[in-house]
Image (cartoon, rainbow, N blue to C red; front, side, top):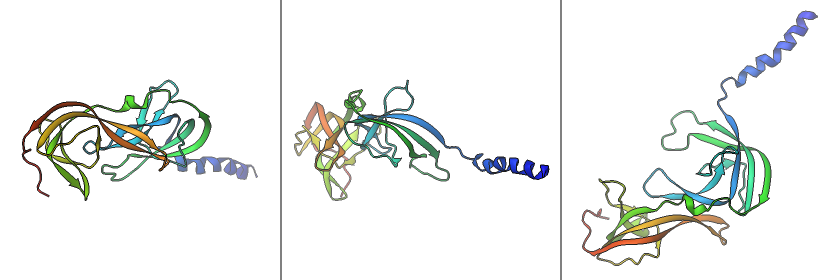
Amino acid sequence: MKKLCFLLLLLPLAFGSCDDDDESRVETWTVASEKGVTGMFWGLGYIPAYIVKMTPNANWVTSSAHINGFTFEKGFEYVLRVRITPITGDICDGPSDTYTMEQLISRTPAEPPVDPKSFSPELDVTIASERGEYFSTPGYWFKDMRYTDSYWRPFPWEIEGFDFKAGFEARLLIRPVAEYDDAKADYEVKYYQTKLISSEEKASEGIPVS
């Protein structure tokens, strides 16, 4: 009988060992009541992103994480427990972790604690003298002036405040901003001209042939 009791005491240890390879962790995040933007891994593409604090004393940052089980509503600040699980195998350029809400701690009406536009970088670009298309979407040809070996790439978004003139190559500063669309009940990124640096009448060279 004593031997049986001893074996029963060992059972939790035996089954608990199944979690030894679990590399996930749980963090308590604060999610702000507005969204900012974060850059994608290609070109100048930006997407709406949560503004979060990953620990109580951390700085606010933007995160493109998709949090399974979490529904964001503009105007509310959230505190939640998030389980972060590494993705194994070949992830290429995709995310390296999955995120799942384990517990919603609070949901409070609030103003954003930081200006969402403070996460929007100002980008130096050159716009070609001809319009371009990206999968049948009208746009521009642009060069990213952060790189010395910059080449023309499609830019399939409108630039608010930019007066495009065919036959003129323009250099300007633009800023991506996450804006809430009431009709869609969701955020979208818009690009705004913040400064026109130059506009020169010339035919841009090296534009890809459609």
